[in-house]
Length: 323
Image 1 (cartoon, helix red, strand yellow):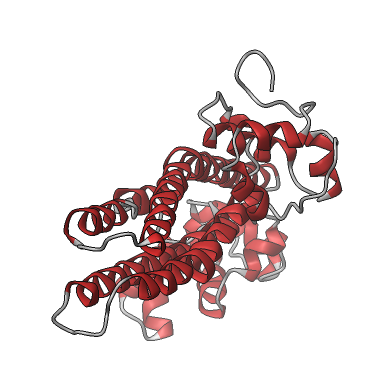
Image 2 (spheres, helix red, strand yellow):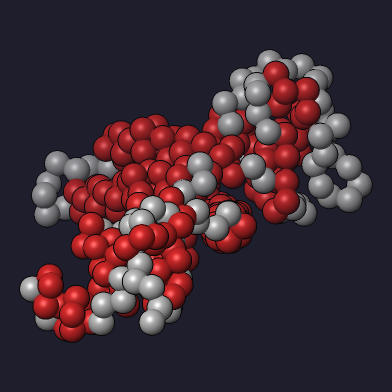
């Protein structure tokens, strides 16, 4: 470890573990196996196809050292959090339960031991629900953001407003056992208490990493995706403006009725005459003319006449000669 209290990529990986054994958990969650000898952090990360900056950011965060948000690769951090969920739900919390059953008397439903176990089971259910939301909703949302898309009606800010820490109840359980469970010389109980304390600290760091590292990183990604979409939309609009519609495009946008009315306008017929010949109301003819002018961006009878002749909607011989 360097003098400025921050792990660096050139440090030996084993020196990190020596300075803070709790980083062993981080190794597992990043998929790093032991047996790396004297290799540096960068060498170990490269061998494991792992983003070194993200590993160092998490390691420094866990150990209370300085870390930089700019070092984080969000996909790598998310995989670390997923693996942490598996560790808590599939390994350590079930292990603590098995040790609790061995250490306390749970045989009497009205007894303190049974109540402690029920308290613990209810807590584990809360943890499972908390992590299921992240696994099933938050992480897929972030994966979509990384792919350049976003989900309507969901944002990381909305999630953050409801994101509560899940470690305090373990502290409460520990205090209940210490204060109220009358057991003498119970090495098993002391051992499980130690596991509970360690798990409480681990869960606290996990939640803090979500609050201080993951959520801010997702907010930055949301802003980047929104800005990129805005730029793409602007580019499309500019492209549309730089490539105006051709007359063929305009003609294809006209209905047969609208083409018929253009020809009648070119022949010099007034709205009432057009309405009488087509058995339409004057209001309907007026509406058709307004739509024609909007589509063609031509707003005079003379302009419509020229458009009709040039584009072959009717021959020049059908145009009445001026008197």
